[in-house]
Amino acid sequence: MEFALLSKDPLTCRNRTIEVKSSGKIGSGTSEIPFSVNLRQRDENLERFYETFHGANISIQYLATVDISRGYLHKSLSATMEFIVESDKENSADLQQQPLSPEMAIFYITQDTQRHPLLPELKSGGFRVTGKISTQCSLSGPISGELTVETSAVPIHSIDIQLFRVESVLLGEKIVTETSLVQTTQIADGDVCHNLTLPIYVILPRLLTCPTTLAGPFSVEFKVAIVISFQSELSKLHKKSDAKTPRLWLAMETLLLELVRTKSDKTTRLGQ
Image (tube, rainbow, N blue to C red; front, side):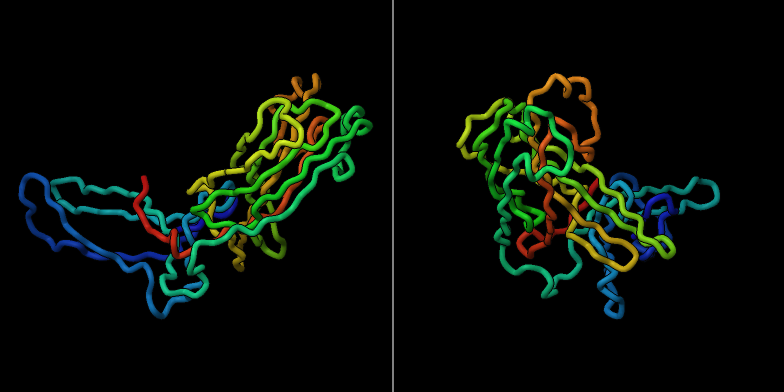
């Protein structure tokens, strides 16, 4: 098990070595040697056992390496594969026993809720988008909800749901926090009909998400943003703008998103 934090070298937190076959000859053809490794020890602190996660600044990996020593006249063989751990607390009360009902937050987006400058026509003409979206959901379930465009003086170009991860690392006496975009899901293209309810349904990417984790040396949290892009000639000049930077033709609402593991979706599987 290895941690990679920002630019630091990976930290090996667990290392198990077992012999699956003693020295001797292996017959020609395909030979299968079954083995098993207990990643946990009863006397270990289970709170330090985290799920697989591949982030921008924090990475938690579990690697299995097989070494075959072939004597002095032959080169040794070695192969490494990552396996994905989703939960180690089989009997923990911390895991939800039943499928989780998403917690919903009601939102409304208008020209008055935006803290950044807007296009003059947006500021004067106004707009109002309302709806609800889940702020707590299972990792195996979607981010769900709905929204309605009630009014808009400027035609809408698109409506997107953006997922952000917030990674914080304790370095010395200060905490370094980085926010990065995980994925963008478009739920509307073009100027949508007013007063029409649009569904929100976003599948979470497995390797790029994990349960919301607040640990000692680091933390991994998530945010979800509803982003409305209005039609503007100015937007065509900034097609590759930073998703975290508000623009004159954008309106958005950002909410904290808690991701949890439930017993119904707990599994451990091999990955490439």
